[in-house]
Image (cartoon, rainbow, N blue to C red; front, side):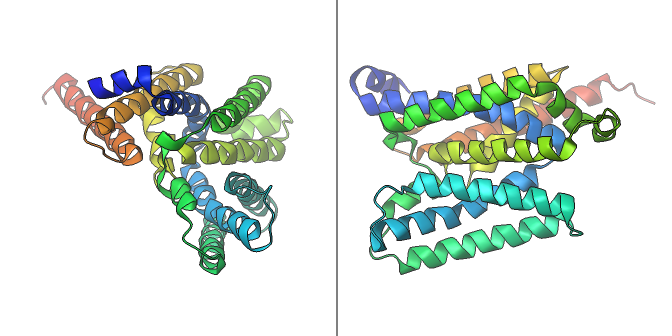
Length: 285
């Protein structure tokens, strides 16, 4: 841990990694709270796995067809937004179960991504960054992009907080009040897609859902309002990310899995502690 603190003073990449974790924590805590409250974690998981299709397509077009302006992150963002739109529209308009649609999008995205990666010459090491996360390789341009995405997320949540809150906790009431539930739901899915791409740069697509939900779940146990849960989730996500970076630095461990293991251990400890306290408070019959 002390080695990482020293590296913050001497190495720019260490500082960039810490800043990336803090920036990702903002969108993670805010949008993750809506995702958990709305109980659409499975939707976020489907979007996350569909992103591989966008990554593979972008790299294929970049190398094979010379589209040098198209970076993997652009493909990831477009694929995530397309998946969110497809899941939302089909779930709202078509007579299909939402879980069936998510399974289809999940499978198509993963399969398409693998096919494009296989058709692209060379070993795509940079795509592994998005699959498993390489927060230590975050650049200044990545930080500016993450800051811009955070700004968009915060601005939209500030503008539409009350409709989002009604959508998450009482959709029937929202419809009675003539709120355009479908539009707000699609917007929430779009923000979820953006946040998934943002977090993939920190812990990777494979582990993104854990960071999306576990800090929120912990914060929810000690919160009495949605805003309090958001604030707590942002703080916890930032703490877990910073602590995971510090713990992984000395032994040279992968940062993403270390962050997730720390987050998961904290969640299990809180859950177990809450259960023990509940038993102690329950009077014997």
